[in-house]
Length: 92
Image 1 (spheres, rainbow, N blue to C red):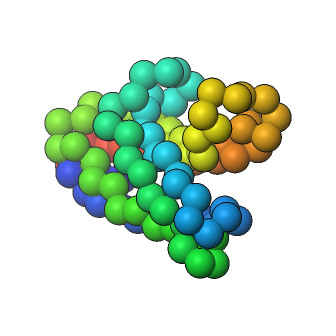
Image 2: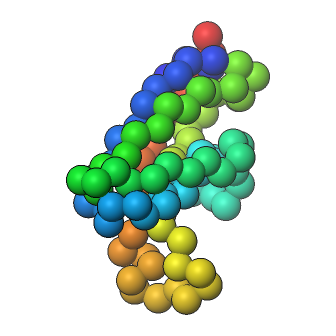
């Protein structure tokens, strides 16, 4: 993915109306490079969100994390909502 480019992520398997939290960060760290975004699952449990890579984001390996908030409960049910995907950012 080139700096400044946009792409759309899609997800499924959620409860209708569930709010999905979406973050972009440096792969295998807790450092995020984009403010957290949110999407709401439609009646079929699906969502999509378009993300634009900052034009000044340094090239490298990044990860997308999605999850459903558990209001601080944690545990296996929360962990089961997490999904990960990796992207490589290249100079434009």
